[in-house]
Amino acid sequence: MSPQSPADAAKASVIAYNEKNWDKVKETVTPTVVYDEVGTHRRIAGSTEVIDAWKAWAAALPDSKATFDREVASGNTVTLELTWRGTHTGPLQTPNGTIAATGRTIEVQAVQVIDLADGKAESIRHYFDMGTILEQLGGGK
Image 1 (cartoon, rainbow, N blue to C red):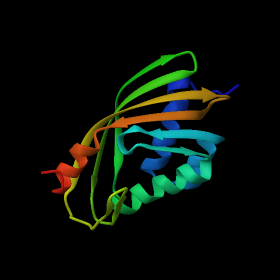
Image 2: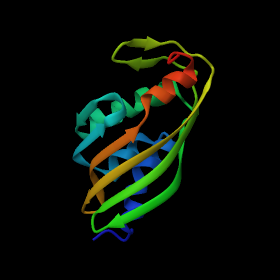
Image 3: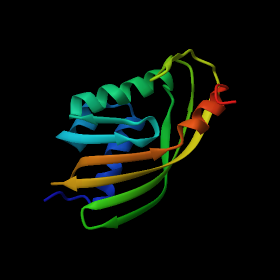
């Protein structure tokens, strides 16, 4: 049993991302974690593959961090309301190509629904509005 509450266990991968601590991310998710990034229509399986995707976000927005606005836990499922902020200083890979650094900041609200197994995230469904991000970067107009 994990000494953490379900909410703390769910927050752990986000906190590790905020710190850009990839080893810590790996400790907070199961090896077979499934990450469903609804905003980009990507579904990624496996801790290494998820970390690679998160590293790409960190390359585009090195100072990106989430703040926690609200949390709701029900058994081993936790819903987190987040606000993501960051500055676009690196290339952002998208399905439609790469967006060169704009120097602009982003702020977008998001929701993650995390299912836990043995105190680690085994699935993460991440909902955010990619259109808002693209508009803030100057490409969504």
